[in-house]
Length: 114
Image (cartoon, rainbow, N blue to C red):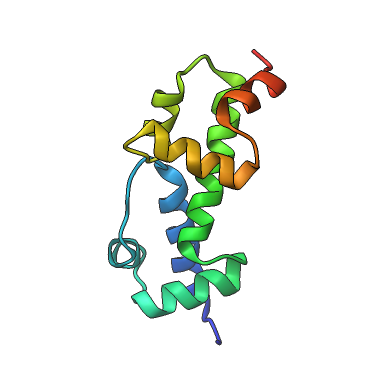
């Protein structure tokens, strides 16, 4: 897909919007509208520009942020779950374990920098 300079600027806006608040659940339509691009172009262009579909990118950002919170803060697993967009700590633990192949508690224990 050919992306114009404007499209690339819109995709960059979308990326910044996603990274701005990882605790929020943003529908594709809302991201697209706030970025000034259509939903289809957002989905296709985002993957082309950044290497991941929008929600895969969001999950990666959340899991990387969660890892940094686990090692650099004393926040509880429940607080980290909320900060990364999970309503329940159990869902966060499942997602984190799936992504990092280690539970949040064990990750904290083996990577503690505090």
